[in-house]
Image (cartoon, rainbow, N blue to C red; front, side):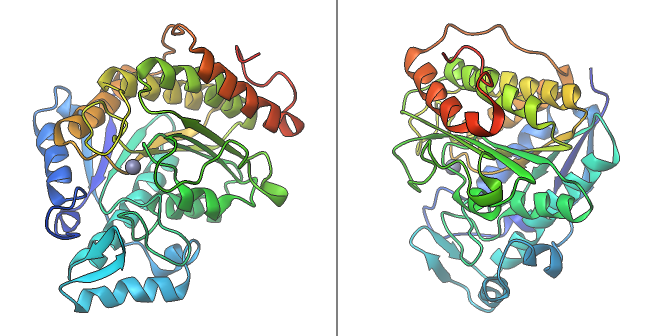
Length: 350
Ligand SMILES: [Zn+2]
């Protein structure tokens, strides 16, 4: 059992509001913090405060104009940045802390092999593009964290995005680069509409994006099947030096936005698979960076399941009964990626 898990968070992240009735609300982080206060292995948790992301860290992912636009929201009690994304006077400071939390969690993980870290900030990040806020996201926290690791000399960073939605901003940030392997499972069709199976990266990054669009209704078995049969073998072939997880919990069965059926058990098994991948490849992490999740019970259950998965350590669950539609999807992905990784990359997809 792992002795220590690092949690990075900051109370500034509680002050950002999108506006009345918005699902991405401070109560999300409050629910997680309440869960942590009576988590059964809370003596294993080490809290480290977030810091603000530095301007040069943000500039690796975002334009100066976008950063300036976020800075300017601090002067207004309300600014609408996109149809789904608004700010109050505290949102920019929350965004700097959320991105900084992901950086701190990453640097902590990279200093200590075998330690998992959690970045619990908001606003979330994976929809934020280079030059604009989008889909509740201001700065792309996980991308800023990955770019920080690359700036320190890492050459292979893997990001698994298991949020309900496709991580368009993260994929676009690194689409042309083999330095980041981006893998995403997401409900499709659904916002933001990207993440088709043939989006595999471009130029030198061709072959370094895996997108697995899934129909609504998928539960633990299908998520575990995708991780065991595609994400794990691809990760073993890539040999990442660092593993980041864009950990959204809106694929939880209780979520009001999503149509998926994942439970705490699913998040627990996915965590242990990624911990196994880290052990097998010698990668640092996993670093879990909070994304979405809009049912307060489902969200805190999901985070708790990840903490338990980390505490219990590396293990692969029994292979679930294979879903044939998912096998067909993975077979298509394997064919698209085979020029870059060889023919027999994915197991059980033929
Ligand atoms: Zn989401």
